[in-house]
Image (cartoon, rainbow, N blue to C red; front, top):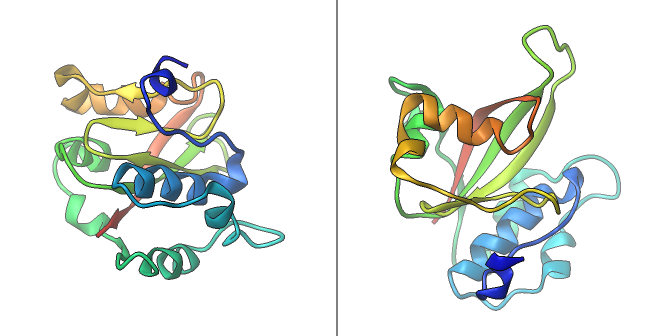
Length: 161
């Protein structure tokens, strides 16, 4: 509520709307005039939103949504490497499990702008990053804190360019 009160833009949705919601937050943060329902129109009736559909949508703004996961593969893992970036617009795909023995992980996406991580869950706080969050252990803890009690790992990174 404080974040919104200070003019911050968030989208509250569900796990099916996480890709469009992340795009809405990032596009709005870049100053593009976009309505949440227009972005959510890319969602299929059933199943998850495809990144190819998300890319097609942002091309209407002269942008692209490119999979850049390989650019973040390095020591410390994807989460650590990603949080070294202090600017940009990223849709971060997460693998969410109850632990290593969980055979049916959930996939979820959040928005990362270099300074904050924004999730579309109505009870998740905006994560304003501090220096301690940009360490190997800190990065893992930041993503785990999005869904307490669950194991959250970055598996794909898409950059809005």
